[in-house]
Image (cartoon, rainbow, N blue to C red):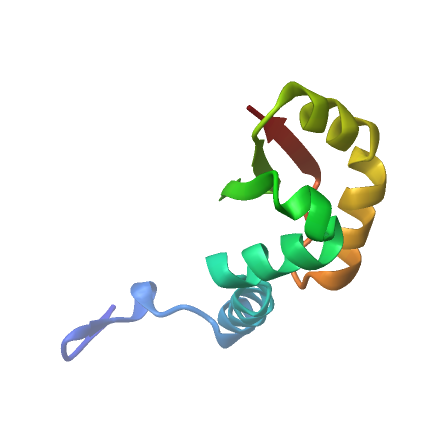
Length: 102
């Protein structure tokens, strides 16, 4: 049934719109900028490690960190769980994976 320019079959119920809107707001609040991630990495990694590493990219639930040598790659790999826990404690966005690259 049509009334004017609006097709009644296309009107969405408010009860379906509100939960989607609330979920979108929650998701938007978890956004984090590149600057935030860099600052977070500096804080969590510390000066020594930060001097030899940087945030390469963020992709979905993974954070990619580039390091300048295999020795730092090994050191960070051994500290991966501890670093991931610290990052997730400090960050509004929760990462599931921390990936180190040379």
